[in-house]
Length: 258
Figure 1 (cartoon, rainbow, N blue to C red):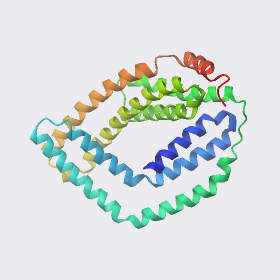
Figure 2 (figure 1 turned 90 degrees about the horizontal axis):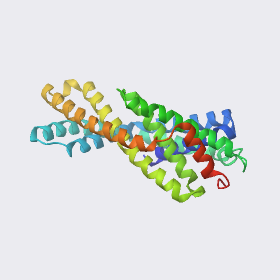
Figure 3 (figure 1 turned 135 degrees about the vertical axis):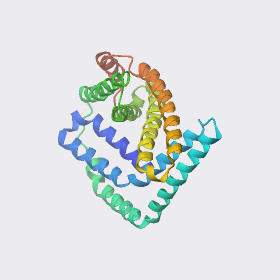
Figure 4 (figure 1 turned 30 degrees about the horizontal axis):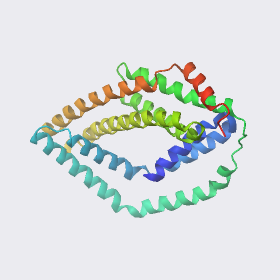
């Protein structure tokens, strides 16, 4: 899980230097770390669903709801154990990932960056912010699960980029990071619960109809609360237009980038 998180941080870095390093360097780095993350995804994905059930259990108000969560949890734990029993394949994937990281290390250390690349950094920040701004406004309507997932990705990229830039203005970026982190967590919970809903449909034959109906209602109610909270934080995080955001970033980073 930690490895996949670091791969996402590196992809955020490549997005940040995209205009400075060039399209080919960006494509290579982004694709390289994206594909590595996907190879290590299976165990983390099922673990995320188990964590989503644990989150859901905290919201149960009746014994029937709690028992329904326990039934689903048992199914997911069984699937997780099956994945763990195939650990030989997982170990092989890890070994391949480590080898590829070592092979790629030199090209990462030799990224073609100038000291004076503020306009390119600003352009990259604006692109990520603008896409997230667009997804936030979709969330004010009737967003799909995919819409919410896309919004979460944009928030996380900007959060990681704020962390990379924090030395330019620690006080300012600390405040940005705090909101970004909270919004990312809410959108992450939303995504996991939405996937849990889909997972139940895949396992329809293994869960009683009454149990599935109860869980769908419980998940639906919690998704509604998470959507409301994400909109509230989104209004803070995307309070500025992309144009105003760009001006502020330029003012904040000018003379402080390196």
